[in-house]
Length: 180
Image (cartoon, rainbow, N blue to C red):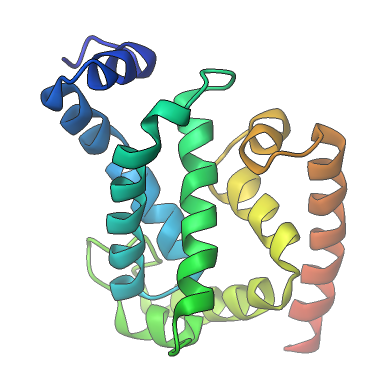
C-alpha cells in the first residue's frame, strides 16, 4: 500500500479497508507525534494526544472533504486535539521539564545538552505567545508548511498566517531578549 497516495488510502479506508486505515496511521504517526510534542512539551501528554488524534481520525474520516491535502486536514485535527487536551489537563507541566528530562533518540527535541538550554528559552518564549500565533509558528517554522497550507489547517486566510508569523517573530525576539 506504500504506492497509494493519502486520498486513495482515505477512500479505501472509508470503504471499510482496515489495512488502508492502518497504513494512514503509520504514514502520519511521526508527524502527529512531533506536532503534539511541540504543542504540549511533555512526552507522555504527546503520546496521549496522538492516541486521541487517531481515535478521532477513525470517527471523523468521513468529514474529510478532500478540499485540502490530507496532511493539512490532519494537522488541524492534531492542533485542535492538543488544545482540548491541554484545556482538560489539570497538570500543565513546563517545556523546560520536557526538554531537560527527555533527551533520548525517540524524542523530537534537541539531543546535545548545550542545545537543551536554548530549547528551554525558545519554548518558554513560544509558550508566552497567543495560541493562534503559536499554532502558526509551529506549523510554518517548525513543520515546514507553507503559509497557504497552514491557513487551510487553521481555517483562516493566508494573509492572517503571514500576519501571525510576523507578530510572533517580533514577540519572540522581545521575549528572548528579556531572558538574556
